[in-house]
Length: 339
Image 1 (tube, rainbow, N blue to C red):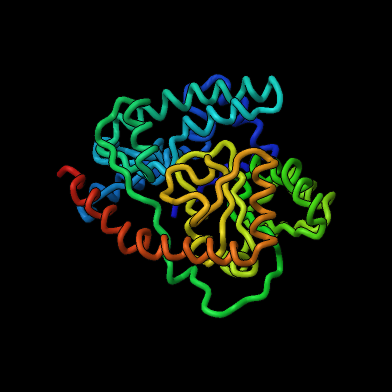
Image 2: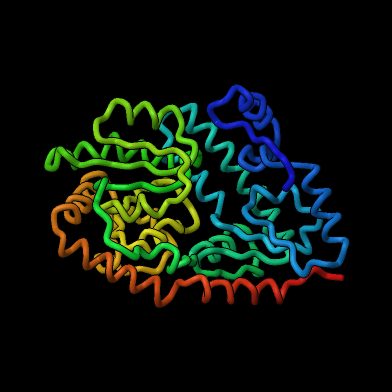
């Protein structure tokens, strides 16, 4: 492990990075993770000849890659798409301008990284096609999102302690936007018909805006970092994924399905995943539709149980880790470090 401190977005240490990003060609979401020490360590390890592959996991790690031409870039998202979506959802002219600037920088940087890498792994056919079209690359292969089905499967019946659960890192802007949008725009519609509805936000590093909303609204639990996410899934009625600005694929969707929990998601929240709407997931865009989908599952046990079982059948049959890792390994085998 190479120590590296990236200031949190709510800290004073973020201000110098923010100001520096205004004049840098490298997007802030990438530059804040650059580490000369890590780059040197990777180069030293690769030179030993003991490794078959270099995998850069996420675009944010790319500044630390010493030899892009020997590296497989694992793209969990098309980062440019995320920033372009931030522009459309920005609540003020200043934020819109900042996001537009970062989106332009991200597009240029992501194109460069994809073109210089030996191979790119995408998490869906949609992302692979986007990168081909946006960045002009051909050496890109999609590998489906996988889940450890045995790990997440509930082994005993558990009591419901919350109606709705959102699980995900709360220091990631698309998740912050999703939770704020849900609590302010969607939850009030749900509570018009079901006032007792409770919500749990489970994930690391919740910011001040989320904590403030949870304090102002009754029946909202914010956990912060949890040692094990599974009990929060097993004890919930419905998983919500109200993502509006994300990219890539949401591993949390398949994890919830493997945990026997039905999912209500926006189209963007389930983008790139293989599913059948109204069979193994409910897709709902717009506050009214999303609220209605949540109410449908909270008030009809038969429909909630049917969707949960069909979702579990889906991930067990097609998206286990065993199947996915075979595909990933095959790509690495074909793109070994050149000696």
